[in-house]
Length: 615
Image 1 (cartoon, rainbow, N blue to C red):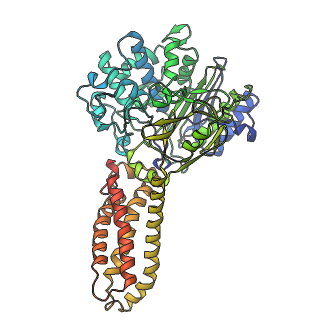
Image 2 (image 1 turned 90 degrees about the vertical axis):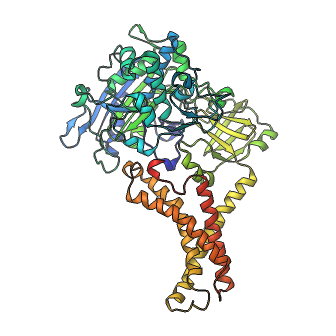
Image 3 (image 1 turned 30 degrees about the vertical axis):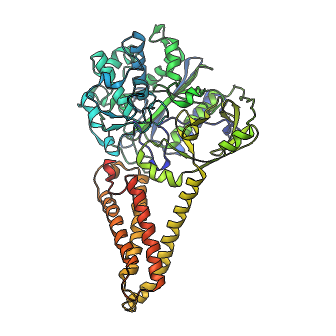
């Protein structure tokens, strides 16, 4: 279960691997010794206290390496038996468990969730034609919001999953299920409860009996059990290395797995074996392929074969396609990835959730791909008609939390321009490989598609979607932002003139102080109603975001005060006191009008009166 920076509007808690363009700047290690040294140097430079690495080539482990310490206070080293937390990698086990039941004929990916969990409410205005199905929970196409900040702070070791699904409510499909992908921790939690309903077992018992125990994952545990308590590494916040608290979360299917790196490596080995490991068949190659292949969204129907599938994401940004997942929780970060094409894989787990851990994983990938010839793309022409229709500004339409839509709608723009056979988008050149599919230069496979819908043009990937913004809407939004900034700056500039006069008592005969003060306060409070929550989100501090706090309550109060003062200011400007001059009236109307419009916009997106710890 991955914590993430909401300001970045991440499209998924997905592992990040290297693009082929990096090869020109940083060569791959030439040997395992070079790789070991490069990873150690990267972790040390980032002040990662401890980590464990497993490297697999030719479907066998060729390197098993531990780095640093598991506890900064005792200096206990990381050893083979050190247990880390896998976070959202738990979703891979949830999806595999569901597919094992599908193979048995006990479950269907297309089953409507409401038929198995009639007591669970998922608001879905498209239910009659497009109900939420099990597959939508596993591939993040149900349109559910990600879980709230407060949910990350719930202790749930003894909370049964039957109760946990209610803890993470409410659930609502923000768009038609099965059309767009947006990463949400909520879906796999519900899917885990479906598994319990079908099997009559607790989720963790079923996964243990059918998967982790037979695979020899002796350290695998979904709660902090006595058996692993003395082996679990401490974990530390990135940067200042403050020790993080271990949270036994109730949403086990989404992110509570505890495991050693060696045991976790059995998972990519199983997938490289297409469901068979050490002669034991766990599932068929067809099931392995289905786990890796997205089929339940618009972009898959358009022909894109890679993206987020069933607890498994494909990464095309390299010389071959790698599959896997990553995750972070309570200061831990972990990633596993495997490439069936070359029989290679890796696992990297660390006790500090720093971006540099994923950077170190990129080094491993470069090593594993070192002998693979860089892909060559045969580009297909783009018609002039399509170039005109597809050119424009795009905005993300699949934020993990709907509360971000207010800011995304005004600030997040991505321009797309076209050449004869290529697109420029998000800082990359994408070759058109036919039928609206695009492959970035150096990538192993296409990862974007342009789709024409009744609502307009989308640039869609297997993990998210952008919509082309009509020119009128784009110009209106840009003009609104410019006018608001102009109103705020002019109000501040005007204050530099009238405040000294007010202090000298010269405004009493010229409309008074209130005519000038209320518009200034209104525009500043309306700005604070947007910027304050953004500042809180930027901290990524769950103690502030997930619980009532002085800062949280302050932002709540500011957001309520802003529209009230804007109305007072607008009324004062329209019906000013005697003696008001034209400049003060114009400035007041401009500032209070801009503040009122801003408050209406924020209110429409739920930001006025928002208690961020409940969002």
